Image (cartoon, each protein chain N blue to C red):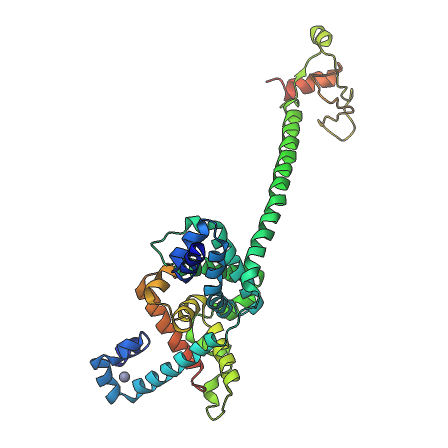
Length: 200
Length: 167
Ligand SMILES: [Zn+2]
């Protein structure tokens, strides 16, 4: 009975409690961490690489790394910061791999840094303002527009606007200053507004 | 507050939108009001990208399976790497040993009876120069580990030796 109470306390506890319990050999604690973050993590990776199956694989790889290197986790950071940071490294690796695999395609999709090139990369929604879009179609267009952002803007935008993380945590995840985070999000929003002016 | 400052504040945080300076600017600037409305809609639609996200039903069980699979892969992979390194290392050691027996330069000696006695191996080099080859030496036989190369005596060989080897 006492053990059952302890387990329920652990499972209801914070991330630090779960990591500590897992390090003592409690596999259920690890399972609970996975269930707590799986949806957010798959969503973050999917919106960053725009490939659902790959996102699931990379999320799995992220948790495998947590499983193996949990002892190196520093409790002064949020567990989520550490988790997102591992995932971000995998996303960056994937983007680099794509760049090597198909430099031409990569440049056309992700490295369109100038506003003019970005505007030309997708159909211009602002030219057909009278057209009405269904919810699904709107979401698809917004996802495509996010996908067309350069990776540094895209990751910051997804972490803030979709994952709803605080600036300080995004700063720790991306290893940039909070001021740079704000600046990248500002730039991302202005680019998206320009692209989606016909459907917003 | 100007439009640039207003747009920066609008893209930052919901709480920042209640700033009196920004509110005052929005009241008199239609351009920034339109921006504010668009950014609010963009945020609402972006949130829906999260609400519509899915997780495979068995995902939380995939991770322990993935760990076991990766561990099993590591179990076979590491010994295989060790064996490969051993084989490559032995091959390099053998190659190095073989190379260390090869003289770094050919020792060419004049015909000296004492050398002839000491030399168990003799390389025979063309006794006469070939037509059109000039001063080129061509070996007919190369022993595996030659200890010395000896000329068969001839005037041409002696001249060549004096010209090219003995300085
Ligand atoms: Zn203004």
